[in-house]
Amino acid sequence: MASSAGLALCGQALVVRGGSRFLATSTASSAAEKKPQENKGEDGQSVEKGSDTILASTFSKSGSYFALTDDSKRLILFRTKPWQCLSVRTVVRRCTALTFTASEEKVLVADKSGDVYSFSVLEPHGCGRLELGHLSMLLDVAVSPDDRYVLTADRDEKIRVSWALAPHNIEAFCLGHTEFVSRIFVVPDHPELLLSSSGDCTLRLWEYRCGRELHCCHLASLQEPAGPWSDKRFAASRITYWSRDSWVALLCDCIPVVFIFRLDAPGRQLVCRQQLSFQHRVWDVAFEESQGLWVLQDCREAPLVLCRPVDGRWQIVPETTVVQKVNAHLHRNWAMLEGSAGVNDGFSSLYKATCDNMATYLKKKEERLQQQLRKKRHKNPPPGPNGQTKKVKSGEAPWSGPS
Image 1 (tube, rainbow, N blue to C red):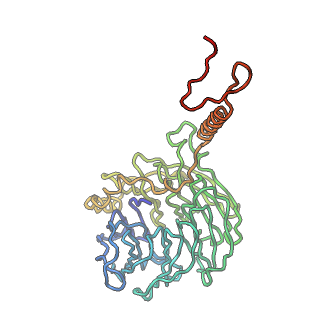
Image 2: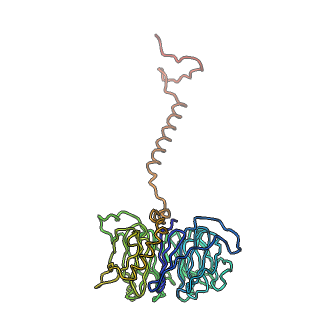
Image 3: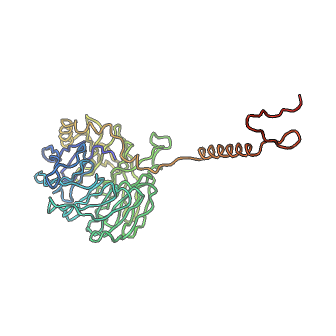
């Protein structure tokens, strides 16, 4: 899957990534640019060289650690206070998603072959351990807030809930999506609830321990019938949550719209409140508890904008000192984001292939019938003038009657 620019937030720590580089800054202090270290594996030997494009990245719960994976099959672990690279380890396959456990003792890495490996944070140079596997590509991985369950989403429409201490034991499946499951998110202040999105253009709410679907929102129905995106298929590339008033923001991969929902936890439902439209392509979104919703977009003049609710309606707020400062850093480092401008959405190749082969079938059937008819005529030539057939010897002209 293609990888566009991305955004990661934890507390006041903010990371913007693009291509093979990322910019680490804070909404309260100065910024510092970081670049992945030399292309060495855990044994010090060179590993398979890719373009070093960052495929996935995430903070730990406290923000003390930051991890990323790239297309050179590396897992790079950083300490953030202060920023320091702790290790560069190799992974078996290119990764699609990663997450820290709640205890921050491990990093779980999901890959294209359907496996999840765990890597120790406390022993930053330790080898990875295979935890579980699917028969199809994994697209996301998450853990429950108590570290009891590992949740995985795959290309074959399934969400699996496995025991963390014994991943071969499956607690439940969350079944209902009709296309690949692109993102899953365990709600932090309602740890029994799970949000999921899919290529079937739905956002669903689950009670994941028993695999029960609580609510399904069809995103296509929220679009205007004559709107420019009404006939497009799209999947969510980001689900982010603001515990203040239980806001959920959903970003889809090919439309410049951010869907804003309210999670009604007691009512076990999602309520769509607003659609935020943008003039430029939106790369990523993330909530910051003290600020609001940060939106990273393909706009050199204002790559980052901040949205907040005003009288119940979300809107872009005028540039504050914090926004100006972060945008100044991004403007000086715009080269790392330029490569993401032409990157297509990463999910288009994951949809089920459908084709109408009825016309081809009918054409082949007609050809077969014509061939059978020609064979039948060759075996049984038409009768002669006396009602009898006469075989013509080779080299002899056929009899045409008296002259």
